[in-house]
Length: 197
Image 1 (cartoon, rainbow, N blue to C red):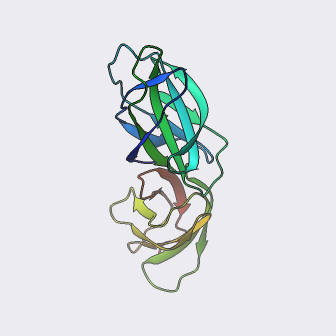
Image 2: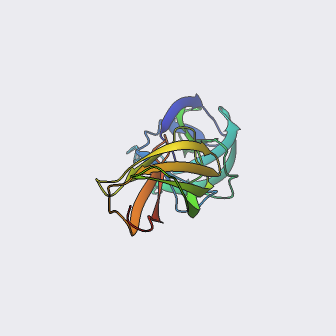
């Protein structure tokens, strides 16, 4: 889950880098501890595959897999939550020059919501919820699918966040919300507002 980052140099003995990969996106998967990488087609017939690497420091990557030339996605699993990872996708060929720049991106495992608990809040038109899960980044925000309900994050850490909802008089029932990290990964969840205000 994340956006395109800066560029680094990478070579692999016996298989030279031949193309700079321009990423269409790096998108989050549906569960924690995973990041799905996605890239566009460089349209270079010399490419015979891609080497995928990752690490916790920029420029220091361990190869975790390879794909064939037709691949455009790669799922990385087994990542620790609440940690930033750097990924490298390198186009390779047996017949290419020794090395060319390769694109890298930074990623954060996907967000989850495991529970949402309403807390009594004695201010008319306001409701507070504690949201529990994983991988909430600094700057996470809440969005509502109901235009009459607005929300703001009033406190957050990696495994929990507190949101304050502004609710119109008479609003009750179940409402869909979305938490969005600064890297644009998101998770949808539902809250029950309780009795009308």
